Image (tube, rainbow, N blue to C red; front, side, top):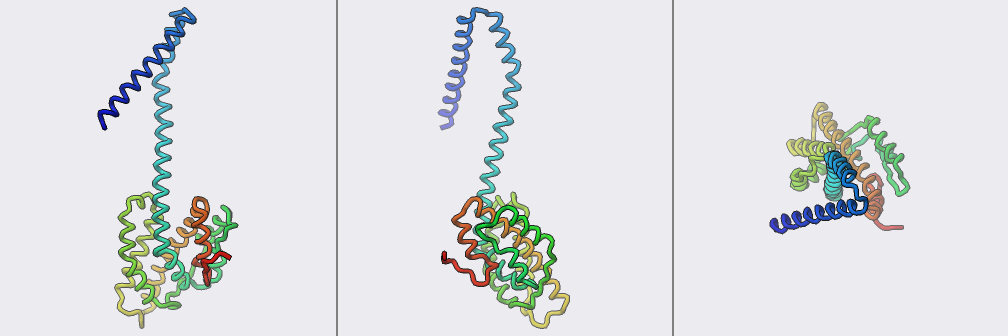
Length: 248
């Protein structure tokens, strides 16, 4: 295989040289001026390094862009699997811990009519709003069981090298892991001191902050590249009280 590639390259090089010689010979017989031909040849030869630099840089940029797009496609696939297996349900669960959750839901009711401005507004709302978390609103044991059962899946995501290209998503995973450890370390959530409650509230807030931003970005990605997946994701939006997969 390797010898065949070397042979093909040699044949291509010889062919290109033969074509070049034939063209110069034709030019000589047609114009009949060896001096002008020599000057033209030296001029082209002098610019050869410039041509090589330009072509090399262009090809390098094209290859880098292709590689970046390939990595992002693979990464978005991993993010999609995360939301299918963990993210959507976790987003729904944690939203119930948010004080004034109805206001949050109004800003995240993604629909098929959303454009860049709506997604930008959603990110701005999440960035500026100082959400209050009250972990007493729901059953922390249920959240603990759910996350512990998903630990193996989350660990498998960290083995994906493409995640190194997405620091924000990696931060999300680490914040989820920390929350799992905090919940698992407590055998009971009864009679928790106020300081410990605030600590858990802070851990939940950290996860929810990363998760909400990643979810909005994921929905925008689906709309642009996978409309059929986006349609189902809109119908199963975790911010809808009673999501329905049926198309009406």
